Amino acid sequence: MYQRFDRLARAGRLILHIDLNSCFASIEQQARPMLRGRPVVITNRLSKNSMIITASYEAKALGVRVGMRRIDAQKVCPDVIFVESEASKYRYVFHKLQAIMRDYSPKVVMKSIDEGVIDLTESAQDVRARGLDVLAAEIKHRLRTEVGCAMRCNIGIASNQFLAKTAAGLHKPDGFDVVDETNLIETYGQLKLRDLCGIGHNNVHRLNAVGIYTPLEFLQAERATLEKLVFGGIEGSYWYDRLRGLEVDDFSSGVKSIGRQYVLERFDISREEIFKRLHNLAEDVGSKLRRQELVARGVYLWMRTLSGHYWHRSYLATVPFFSDTTIAYLAREIFNQSPEDPLEIGVTLYKLQQDDNPQMSIFFDEIAREQRLSAAIDEINLRFGARVVHSAATIGTHRVKVKVPFGSTRYL
Image (cartoon, rainbow, N blue to C red; front, side, top):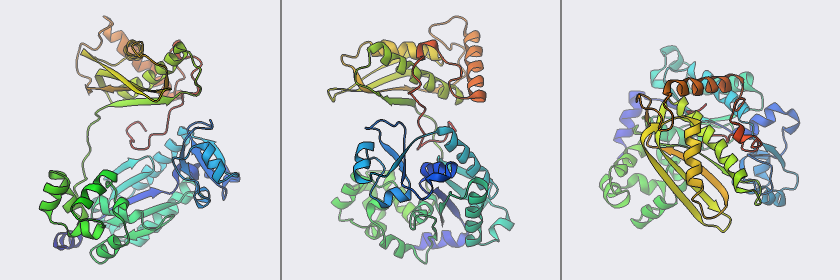
């Protein structure tokens, strides 16, 4: 059953996964020594209904959890300290961690703002010769000395990305584990299905339906069972290999869409003020689009209304566009069709393609001028700070802060 894993492990493939512990809270504790050892949570805003995006281990120990509303966290822990997120700090630590990781292998992938993978298979011989425990201890030491003494991380090592991430989650905080053929069964025996990265609520139900209730039973399932009865296709075969240590996740997918959303800070904002905030979002997605050297053909607008309804509309253009002006114009045209005022609003660009079409705008003849203007604004904002230059139509929307990107690092 485990022959493939044994063969792969003996072949020497090594993946190291790093996971920063309570990343944003730890960064704030590093930046502000008075917060160390105290229950700290991070929110994108300080309003009473804002959601907690990160909690320090001190806060978690007192019952505070990610996803709680601020008002609920205060009931659980009256002494909890709320800190508004500051993306520039987190970007700085992201780049510092990335630089440390690149000293160990030419093949480094940042999975998120607080997680990264080092392919030690591609490392120099002198790096591999140091020993796994030595490497892990060295990386942890460098994180504390080069970033800050409040920073800790979990490190997991295995023969594929899935098992390395699983190993990194076994003993938090500040843990180090290796999963190989000697402890594979023991490791799965400690876990539940929901502990496996990629197995959500729906997948648990699918597995349960065929009599699979534990990771060990998942491991013992036949490939055909997973393909035909559980996942309904090739994903079942991927899981069969993934659980045994074969690498099936070493790929990068292209950008399919770019979006932003915003929960309104009050319920009594006029539609004109709402559009100012939407224009702010349009400028942000436009900047991200151009940073990827892409253009878009579609704009999708959605909102969650005060009455609890979900409303959405989209527009698909015949030729691609890229400018903030065009994106904001199209977003406003869609917004004007909405029957109710929103509580939350979002804009997404889709049908993305490479920036290689000479017909770049449906609204301007002077395409080259528009390109130069957008490029100049982007360069100024990149050099001197986000939104140093922005449309006058977005004056007064400083509350629409750039959120911390959890699942994507392409804008960092």
